[in-house]
Image 1 (cartoon, rainbow, N blue to C red):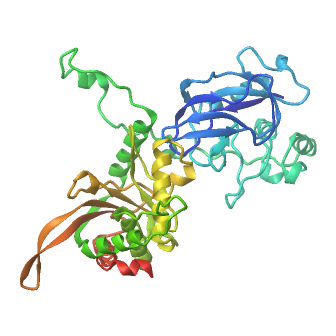
Image 2 (image 1 turned 180 degrees about the vertical axis):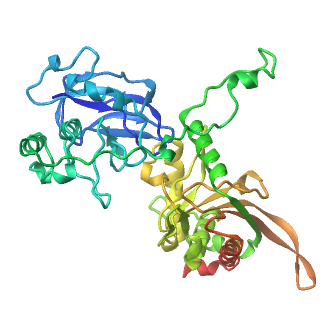
Length: 446
């Protein structure tokens, strides 16, 4: 039976993507794991792998097509012994007709039919099932389709394929024995059925306010749509609370100079790392969260998620928007490693080459606009984070020490918190710990 290859959901927020390039052509033989296409999402360019072997029977969506919806049919793979006659005139397999409506359904975040391998994924119309603890049940696309059509629960079927994979013969055996019947599907929750939140007025409403010819329309790309949706969600569902503090930077700047001045060099004489103030800010926030673990959390309606490591997202501006790559377990990493990770992230972010696992998740974030001359600002919390630190410019200011007025380099930072889980006192405690590391930076080296 022909296997439909559909547009994969490569991230929880992806609704559509651009099919940038096919790396195979009709008639090519492919094996599981072969890279067959490149897809541009709102955040990155991703590779798509085949999850089954066969022959490319038909490419339905040509290379260069923009705005391909998640779960839309893009190609058909023929199994051994099949030829093009198995593909109907519409481009899909005849056996897949009952699932046409399912193909049009929006992607389901993370538990969707996307089978992720690092940054590479491919989908079929039937989601890969999960065990009770979240593990994936390995099965072929054909087995999943047959199980769905016949109301079978793959969790109740023993696989006889490679590595215990459920295959067609296992489904046929279950049908013959009458085992594996699935329980009735639960009704969709009210939250799942809720319409998408509006993010602004309609184009017609705005254009009525201006003279014709005094403007141009620039359609939103996927990244801008995602940013708009996420920020509206944040502001409508997260009660924000803000705490600000001034930090003196002179000791940190002096230590930074010593660290960079003593950095080892490669064979060409280039330093192996160059630590920035932003790198030290990431480290200081990570250590502060380690010291104040009650603030290293995420809110859910059922429980508080307390994180064991400080995974710090860092806002990186790229054309058309921003992306937040994550320094994992930043409290454990030396400044030199954080510095080199951030340089790599920044370069690949601008090239849209980051993998989903490199910018999804995290426990907090840093947004630094100091290099743009911004003195202070408040950032918007990005769920599932409970905090985000907005970092302003370090500049010379008059400060009072004892009874004397002196000059110091001062940086204002503002912590935005999700007040459901990080209240004012806890936010202040976290900022005090952060300020301690910034003003006594030798503590970041031990």
